[in-house]
Length: 82
Image (spheres, rainbow, N blue to C red):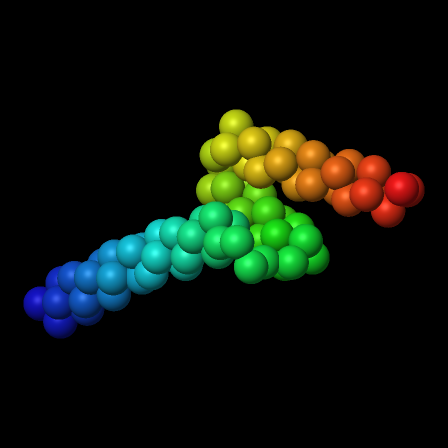
């Protein structure tokens, strides 16, 4: 009986952690849409989003953020060469 309750508590605890990760990811996405964010900060956020989706086996979404990160790097390189 104790084992059954312990298992239920573990499952509930793990389930309570799942929305926190989504809140974190949503927060990163909201930061990207902000106007007053540096290029370095955008690059860091794209990197974190890419890593999250890669680890979550969501490769198409991870690739989308890698592409955005590359575009940002290319745009920054063009601006530096002027």
